[in-house]
Image 1: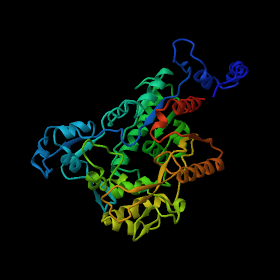
Image 2 (image 1 turned 180 degrees about the vertical axis):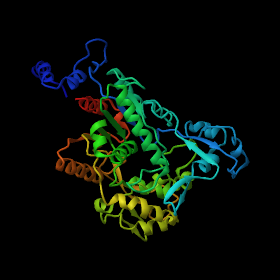
Image 3 (image 1 turned 45 degrees about the vertical axis):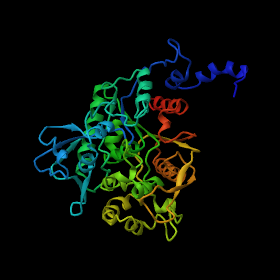
Image 4 (image 1 turned 90 degrees about the horizontal axis):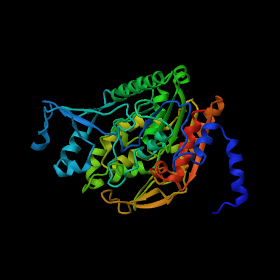
Length: 435
């Protein structure tokens, strides 16, 4: 739609009414085309990437017994990339080894997850905003790559004012008081990183920016700290399409038919399903009964399954082993939302076709379902987005803490930090968080 000339003449005056950081970002460039004015006072930023962006390295010890001879070829040879380049896995016929070495084991006594015997893992490049990698051909601007470039145009620099906190995608942050050896270590490292970033920048407080699963992890990290520590070190939290504890239909689809969030060339989601079901993260964020209610999520000819029927649903999937960790670790999360209690901006796309119900008419979970669509961001259902945002707003309002929820029409779950229109809104809110 064209902007009339009288309105264009008013734009400079309207810009002058904005606070200077936001005015600098939205103003026309003064120097090079497409450039942005640099922020004079920058609070350090720590990035928490989306689910498929973090990398994992492995090391095989003498305790490892491979199911195939060539899966043990790297035993005793130190650390090697396990989930960095999908094509390497295909080219070296390493897919069966990848599935085996990525799989976790749930310990019902400890109520925690661990690697298979003889497999050690670590997340490389912790601390760098570029410590992630894109694993989909042609998707060159995902995993914060484009957003980082925008931040650099504002004067941010990796390792100086811009940092990253990649994580092990297989694990899920626990509720306070629940065991998780992996997240105990990870949250400790993030806390050290926050304090390091603050000290390196004149003891300024830090802005946390998380997308998708990373947004959920950023919030869970903050909730693991004391309020006194948050008040000292956290300036603002920017949640971009965060995975909500209220859940999403896509999670039950992934359990039934294999993951859509791990894409390997020439490998079907069904083939990855046994590995996927060993992950703690695979059962996290299943649709919450108090949000999705009695509406069928899975529809078959003989039986429908709602958010109240997970015991029967997991049994129908021949995944009864998932019931105990679900009851102990996931169900309690569905019952209560813990707001981060720091100034927070929550951005999410809406107005995008999003799977709301999955139809397996013949009850065959080995085939892809037919989708019944509703509203959302393409991954997260609108009912869940609104329930999560409303509860965060209620808790923050009760405690007189800033909270702002921004709905972006037609912004997809992944595209929100890639599409120019939505990215500009995201960057403007990060700039605003520097006030």
